[in-house]
Length: 398
Image 1: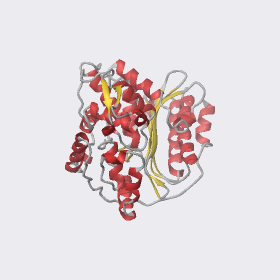
Image 2 (image 1 turned 90 degrees about the vertical axis):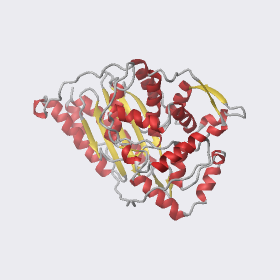
Image 3 (image 1 turned 45 degrees about the horizontal axis):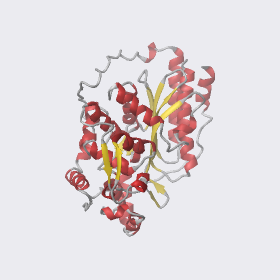
Image 4 (image 1 turned 120 degrees about the vertical axis):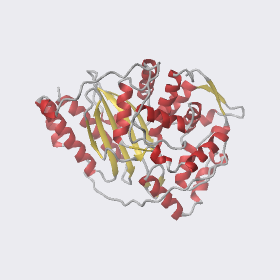
């Protein structure tokens, strides 16, 4: 315990760079879609609801379903003065460390570490909205599993992915989509979306689950705060770049060519606005709230909870982000997110997850980088350090 406290207080895993950048606030205009009907519907939803970006912030009320056990009653958290001395010292050291990491990172970052069993959380920029990018796939899979729990969807449902479903950027499934499409299941789409961050698999899963409005409704019912959900991969990424989406952009390097043809001033304006007011924005506190509720079985049925957690644990992307700070015996289930780059600046470089100690305690972590231009190694070091800080907090409170 003392070793853990000393390690936290020394902060010897710190990042020693400094830097600053400015942000311009500009509204994202709505692009007109020429794509498949479900994409056109999403465009209309965005057009009708730029104001809905604020309405996407979930209401506090939530409903209960028969497939989900009643949320267990919890005892009121003890006042800090009632906590054991070791617990108070561990919390103080963790808060100190998280503040140090956030303050010294040369970019715009939000951090949260939540003790899932006690509810205690330490954060830096905890309520600020950051671009989620592929972190939002977490909410799509939760919504799909919610639909499974309600009897509206089955993990074994057969789905045909066609060329009209292809998106952009990371989409390994595209290699298997021929002239007659690719036959697969909801279960497989979810695995691809979470573990490999496949954009096409995620978009098909999204529409099978009911589309963006279904995701927003799920987040609202759960009472998760400060989490937005965007219009889907194609429309989100094309809006950020100032490109009007059409399905031809899903082939080869067509999207990159179209993006390169957008005037530099337009791209910069849209890029800056996205970072400042992301349509898919989420706060570190909201993200760790959702992770904690999942782990506690408060979002899904027991079977769906187990399936979601095991899928997160199979993630292949970002092995050197949060996972890079794990110690022997610790495990992680996580979801990464990586945004577009403009002139060396990236809009969104993230990782969220649940780490589990050898003795079975759980901690929800979120590191959300909204704007950054420093090398990948510096970003990964920050994420490693957040994981290490959570582990040292665990060790110090025993």
